Length: 147
Ligand code: TYD
Image (tube, rainbow, N blue to C red):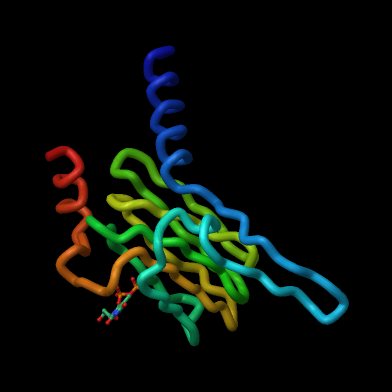
C-alpha cells in the first residue's frame, strides 16, 4: 500500500516536471497589456507558430504526441483545457491567461477541449511541420514509450 502511494506520487511528480507552466513577462499600463516572448522565455528555438481559432465549443483537438516537436501552448484569448498524458497518468490543465504558456516536451500525449467562445490557442513549436514525427495512435504512443 505504502509502496503504491509512493509510486503514484513519483509518477505525478514526473508529469508535473515534464509539463511546466511558463510565465510570459508582460508590460501593463493604462493603455493595456503587452506580453513578450523572446529568448529564455521558451526553452527551445521557435521554428513555427500556429493558432487555432473559430473553434466550436464541442471541438476536440490534439489527440497526438510528438517524437521531435516540443511545444508551448498559450490561451491568447478565452479559455480551453489541455489534457497531458505521459503514458502512465493524465492531468487536465485549464489555460485562460495570455501570460501563461504550457510547455509540452516530446512523447507527451495531448488533447485539447472545452473551448470557450472566441478562444484562440497559440502554439509555439520547436520544429517545422512534419507529419512523420506525429504519434496519432494512443496505443502506438504507449508502445514507443515501453520500447
Ligand atoms: P491537427 O494536427 O489535426 O491539429 P490539432 O492537433 O490542433 O487538432 O492538424 C490539422 C490539419 O492541419 C492536419 O491536416 C495537418 C495540418 N497542419 C499543417 O498543415 N501544418 C501545421 O503546422 C499543423 C500544426 C497542422
